[in-house]
Image 1: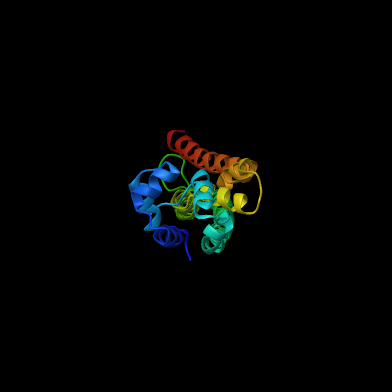
Image 2: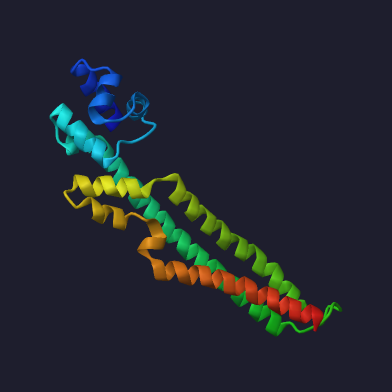
Length: 205
């Protein structure tokens, strides 16, 4: 049973109105309604108060949600790992094709110092770069769509770990892999900057 259903059922069993429960745990009636309808999730402090009021453990309150939360975090982590691989591979291929074609195909096209290899390299670079950027945007949307910080905080609390540990661990790929994240961002900027700079040099040179 999900926590919203647990709250509703235990509230009704005790003959409490939503206003009564809200006053007991220091939130608004709208907040209680959102919990029971599954629109929002109680924070850790509210879970502590609810468990004391209902006379049950926090684990009993959230046991129906822990498996879902754990699966969500695992699936999101796996997706983000794959997306990071896609970003790196697509960017590496984009740079390799651009450099390789520009170096191997030296026939001029009659526009500045551009060669056919330059044009072909750009034609291959742009779609691969677009794939890499799409993967990056997808990863960011996953992090925004799912409140991974909140999920991990609740899971850490349910497993008896300090809440602070859950908060420190719950900041997604960037916090968990700061070096890799910085390298990927730098590589994106460096690659596009190098390509634009080279094209400008060839056009104006």
